[in-house]
Length: 242
Image (cartoon, rainbow, N blue to C red; front, side, top):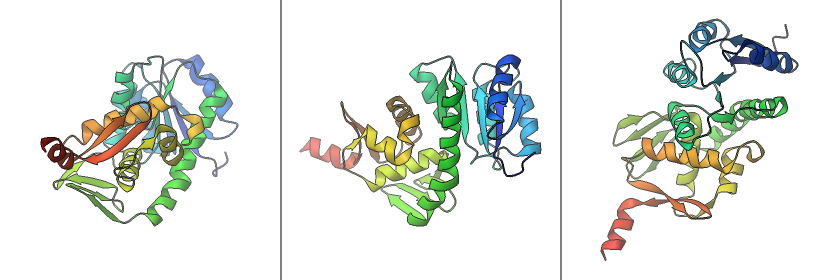
């Protein structure tokens, strides 16, 4: 076994599908598999995966509960987590991102696309993140929100808010471009790899971010047919009052 290969953990309750994924991905990665979230958690203790790809519908522990368990363990909070699901509702996508998933892939998915998404997440977590950290201030403040990039922690009025790495990167990007109208395509290009995610992914992440940051004194406005803009809520209220 090549120790230089990235470790990919595939979690799916369908043995045949699990086998197909493993047979293809083992050409590029060190692949481990599990049939449910409970078994996968035990496996994580042994191998410490570089990335996790999990089905949504599984017995004993489904994909979202598995994701919640992974994100509650400090050892695995920075491991990219991709959810596979035949369900395509916006509510489920938003819930998945809220729990800490980094991507949501609709089934059926082609093997080349699955590998492209895995590779994109590994590249972002392996290369883009360190580069961003060297350019970003350790402490970023905006209104009543504070981001400690060194510790990957976010606070609103000194109360800690649990955000994923992608969500921290996204809100940092919005703060850095406060009061600017941002195109969805620009957000995709700057925060994600634009060729492997859709505008719906941006929308779902924004929705999840709004829910988590509901006490933030700034708000993420939707610019219809264009994208988003971060604005100071208090300024807007004062403007409307006058």
